[in-house]
Image 1 (tube, rainbow, N blue to C red):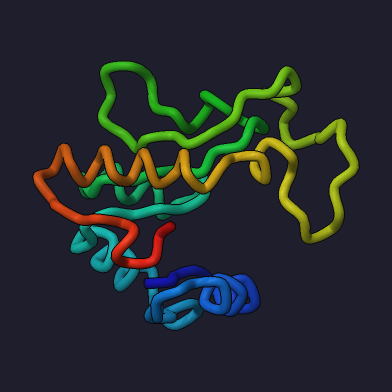
Image 2 (cartoon, rainbow, N blue to C red):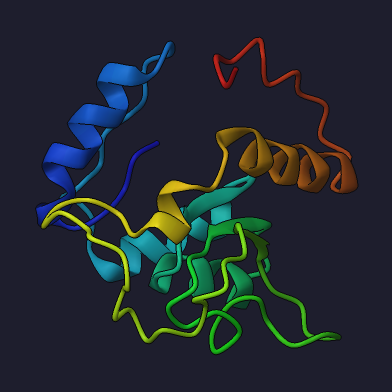
Length: 145
C-alpha cells in the first residue's frame, strides 16, 4: 500500500509505474488517525525517516527506515536498547550535514546519501524483520526483486 500526503501523489504514481505488482494507493486520502490505524495493523512499514516510521515504532509494527545522513542518529537509528525501526543507510564522510548537502542535488532529487542506498539492502532488512516475526514470504514472488 502506498501512503503519504497530497504532495506525494506524483511519487506514488512513479512507484506504482515501476512496481511489478499492483499497489493500493491511499496517498492523500487518509486522516492522521486512519494512518495510525493502518500502520498499527500493517505487517511491516517501509519508508523514509518521517512520522510514519516513528508511529510504527510506537505501535510496535516492524519498520525499515530509509535513512540519509542529514540527521543520522538524531532520530534514526534509535539508541541501542530502544526498540525502533531498522535503518537502511549508506554511510558517507559528510554525514550529520543537517541536510546542507555538499554535493549538487536537483530540486526534486534525493541527496546522494539517500539515492545511494541499494534497494537490495532495504529488502534484506525487510526479510530479516519478517523472519524475526515468523512471517514466511519470498519477496521475489511479490515482485520485490
